[in-house]
Image: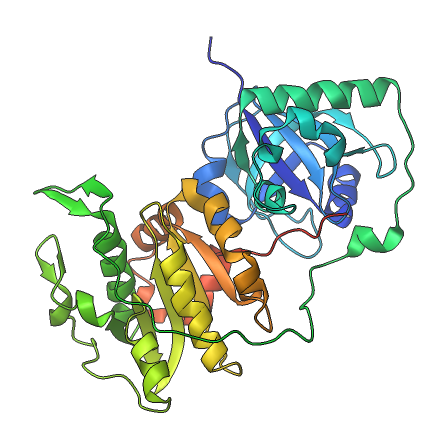
Length: 370
């Protein structure tokens, strides 16, 4: 018999109320999360967590395979990646369990390097939890349902959203040197190839096919993906726009992929397929430090399993010190989502606009701890 798996299911107080009002029989996630949602099996448990107040509020059991549906349930978003569920436990805000009460039994609280590092495990859903963490939470929620303890909740926290931190100083910038080639590989049809190069090619080709000019990091121009040379893309720029100073342009020239419309950068991508995610973030933060009024959408593209690492790194004090913090401006795109969207959208890619990335990417902002 297959072992039950445990998954995190995030709710705001509003979406939890809407879920309950709709019969508490269907939970949903954003379209971009479909590759992960598709892994949930009937019998798996979903641990429900209230953002804003950092409390565990319920347990759901999956009773169907995942499916897509846009029937209205939630007012503000569709959440079309859905699963039919049986609600095993549903608490209210006051009887929900503050997650810190379980910190000794949950892995995300172990070995933390900062007091907010744990929040990275509670910022995207669904995400797979260890059986030990899942069983710890379910056991605590079962006890809370039998013997509820009421803890007052600040009503404002139920609606709270992260805000920019005013008055921070801009951090001095340096120009990082080009990275060594990524060492993590995937198997291609002809030979082992670098995963970094594959994703770089997909982003370049996607931008090119959307009718945008594209730029690849100057040290990567000679690369190819399965025999398709970067330098032969019709819309690959040979030079960058010169509206910035030399130091800024040297930083921009090292960013993995840029999409441009005329002289405007419409999206910037750093790809991190190896254990380090810091160098790409340094380039993005340097760009923001040198040009604090720039409004370029920034994306960190990395393997799905590196989501928490990305969030942890992007919320380092160095990056939080920018105004606004880098986490408010840079979003995360999982490799699997990028690959799936490109494979699904071949026929309509020429009609896409760059802002479609908003739907396939995830926020990197940490939940504000209570």
